[in-house]
Length: 371
Length: 67
Image 1 (cartoon, rainbow over the protein chains, first blue to last red):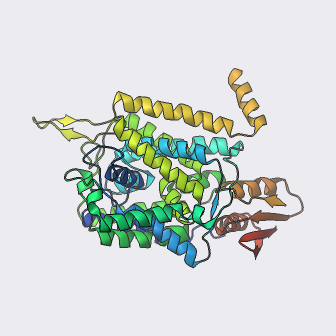
Image 2 (tube, each protein chain N blue to C red):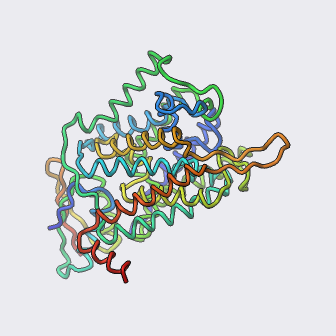
Image 3 (tube, rainbow over the protein chains, first blue to last red):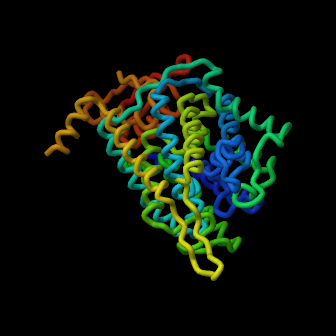
């Protein structure tokens, strides 16, 4: 019985090393990769939000999509498909992003933060697991966003083509884009090195099906450690790397680009875990699937971009812990608007989870609630 | 025959799991349309003591699981 795939473990190790390298080369601390943060930076870079500290054309996103595209085409796995509740996926993607930006990281950054000693990520992980369990509850009762159908090659190529377009525009006309001069958006590894690293990771992620939510989900559903082994490999690699580089600092307060408001860290990641299970994969996996020709995942990514714009235009995103002028800790967190945004997300996810159950399951759950 | 074409992970494996728990004959046939679903079903089938044969036809896979 082969429960652990060597390819998944190798991919996890490479992702961990890549994240360490990107941070070493200039990315923000514990942010070698963060799909949510980097999509948010791209959203700002094209002027869809005005948060001046989070605007950059992150080559990591472009590289992941194109790496997956190259791997899929080269091995005959590119398959254009679409039509599995795309509008619902768009909404799910938007709220997954709002949840991730409340926590200040996608599931992948949650693992990287944990590997850097950020104990808030442990709180996030607990929330993430709770969210996955809620999603699995609905999956077991027949939740489905219905099937996708074969689509035209150009439909399946939308996100790879958008990625190429952004890449060319950024190289040829960089003045088109807004670029942070301070804050996380201004911290980045050299563009082409980051692009190359992300291409390699995109290829491996496509071949291994690496997915942060899939690991916990499959352990619960099928008692399979297959995908979880990648998750653990990333964590161990990053933790060892940070220890060697003296970048491992355990604690809650003042962790890099993180806040220690536990309740909202937890709830943000509940939303991310739940939504990612309903979508069939974490934000990283959505990028990879979109690179393989999945139009529904491309729509999900567009939803995440809108979620990022909403999060910053309406002040929903988390703010990091800081020190005031007297040197006292100011615990970050999310605004009241951010709390309301998350709660709206929970209501929306309950509705989506219920209306996509088979009819008899909807009636059964309604009966139990009435009783 | 389970038709799991077009469904995203993990639904194809869940469809097989449900069938496997009720199927008495020891033989299950599944249609999927992605290599990812094919691989995931194979991993799951092996973990439950089934062998799997896969026949590809124009990007779709006909899988036969035998105890």
